[in-house]
Length: 174
Image (tube, rainbow, N blue to C red):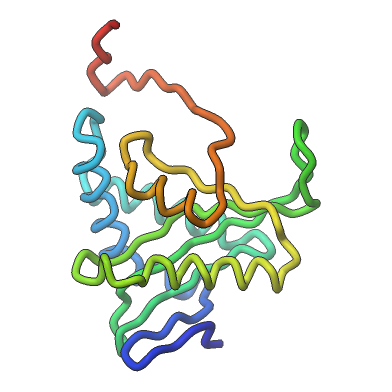
């Protein structure tokens, strides 16, 4: 099923069958995370992919979860991975099913051309088809560009998550 198509790029709905093809795009995003959060100790690419792949296989098995794969011809150049799970939330009013955009990745050579926006549009369209109105997106605190993109789309910060990561050096005291 093709969700979106232009002269050179196609976005199609996919599932578990494409997980292994996502590896280079995940690695590209992992490298981007190193750039925007150099203060964090991060796994090497191989270990990071191994862990993410296991999560993808677990998440995609849940009803409604999906991948939107962006292709330039036959070459994967971006994807959105959406995990759908049961609601409602226990604090604020939400639907009986909710979604989290677990990953939005665009190959470095395709960034800045609107592909991420097209993927987000396709995510919204698919969630509309599924009758899901609640969407969560996690973003690194230091990834201000991504935060601006999501805020322009009407998303707002909901929670701030604090962490003490044993492998990362402590932040300087104020």
